[in-house]
Length: 268
Image (tube, rainbow, N blue to C red; front, side):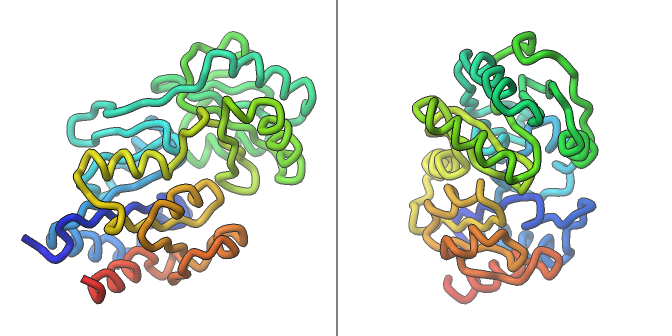
């Protein structure tokens, strides 16, 4: 028995647990090992799809299933099996073709099984592929195989805002549409978010909500911050997360997770 028995710590990956260049502060790794040794359950909640997370998975010392694809996929790293997968409705291809007609500068990515498909690729989609070290298969949206865990639109922020608003105004009963950074708009099935899957994971682990702690830096993290007993963010978080009211910790490069675990050590 340890002081963190029955405690679940969920962190975003990019720019929260891991800094640019796949640089994980050693203090984070040391703190996580201590947290786990005291009975805590630690996991990552990321917008990355399985194949995009695969290259960094060995670097992440989780002891609970990870949450991928912005909350669409609960994945057990021990067995290598999906625990739960929530996919977009088939009509998503038709809807995104409408988006391309109305907003012709945006790029579309779609995530099907272990592959990513792209169309109308722009500088931001190419930057994203380089970042996650995956090559997109270029296909017109209507030809992309389904089902999709998630889709993404990519362009400058000010050009994506009207696309997001159009999606939520016309198909708000079908989709969640939330930014994961200033150039990527994530689209998942209605009700599918990081927060919803954190609650599902906690239920499966038998962990009470008052012992869930979440930390993240971007808008797509707000749904999981909202289900936490206490929500945290690194100092490098976007203004929307700071305005939402997350408790601010040191920046990613300064060991955000190590600082959080020190606070939990004092509390428990």
